[in-house]
Image (cartoon, rainbow over all chains, first blue to last red; front, side):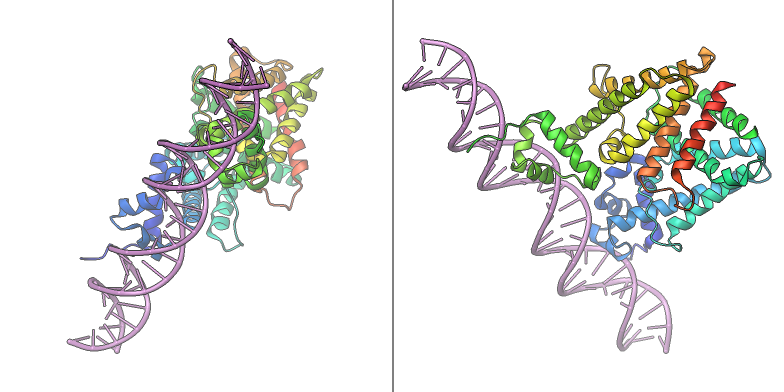
Amino acid sequence: MPRAGLDPAAVTAAAAGLADEIGLANVTMGLVAERLGVRTPSLYKHVTGQADLNRRIAALALAEVGDALRDALQGRAGRDALAAAARTLRSYVVEHPGRYSATLPLNPQGPDDPIAIGGARVLDSLAAVLAGYDIDPADTVHALRLLRSLFHGFATIEAAGGFEMDTDVDKSFEWLIDFIDRGLKT
Amino acid sequence: MPRAGLDPAAVTAAAAGLADEIGLANVTMGLVAERLGVRTPSLYKHVTGQADLNRRIAALALAEVGDALRDALQGRAGRDALAAAARTLRSYVVEHPGRYSATLPLNPQGPDDPIAIGGARVLDSLAAVLAGYDIDPADTVHALRLLRSLFHGFATIEAAGGFEMDTDVDKSFEWLIDFIDRGLKT
DNA sequence: GCTAAAAGCTAATGGAGTTAGCCAGCCATG
DNA sequence: CATGGCTGGCTAACTCCATTAGCTTTTAGC
């Protein structure tokens, strides 16, 4: 019998994929193991347990979001950057709802925790968006929290299927970007 | 032996209280039963299972939020109403993070589902807030989604301890209300 | 090839949700 | 006041899942 050749990253990736498909809450160690062609206890050679696995999924999601944001913001500023960041975040959450939901608990265990690092990278990108506007430095943190709250809330509700279908969600989203853009300009 | 005299509402209330104290994810049927002075299987005479219990908690939370909003908005309009609604929602979530988090899955099973009714009442209150502004009717739904996304996102992140403490969260919150108020006025 | 660490496995434990079936308290009726 | 049924609570039992212990075998480096 050859070995499966797993490592923490492979286990995390499998779990994250599963989470996107069936929801994070339905991800069991058994299903992850099955997907990897391995027996359940073998996972514990790479991950200390389910809590650890969830944290790794969160770190993965934050890193991916951070990368996507960095790419999307290349060479953009002002309204363009705002729109790009918003759309990037939204589509990431819609495509990867399971792994994104792993980021909600949000308890980094120190400055070197991958979760803290990933979160900081995301915030840096949002801060870069704000740099394109003329904002009183004292208000930057507030504006940052505005963007974070709004994007997170919108994406979470949409991923949960929370918007009734009567009116186009895409339209609302674009309207929203415009609303923020106008507000930040004054 | 006298009977405990339980009913679905009592079980739901106990579970909701527990959720606020230890987090929804940590609420087990055993703990709920213990709090009610009853053995675990007895709960199933009042609730069909954990899924049902979670839905009841969600319905309870939405009803409570709806009531709180209705009270808070009495006699207020415009910026006053906006601020009142925002503060009411925020403090509800901070005080009852467990039961509020039960509302996230958001899958009403029909128009007569208590979850749907409670959600509609909350949205009605937010719509009442918007009525105090001069908004193009075609944009009302967008503005509604703005408020919902922003308040939900802010409250969720705050309840999860997601804002770093350097800058005062209360200040950010008031700034946010102001930002929305100004934007809705134009 | 040889050895030791690492990776996988089987077996076993314990906790949580749930179901089945028993029994007693409560309520309405006679 | 007796009684018969319903209902709510209990014990026992089952399943599924996370986790641990301890064994075995691959594999990397000498």
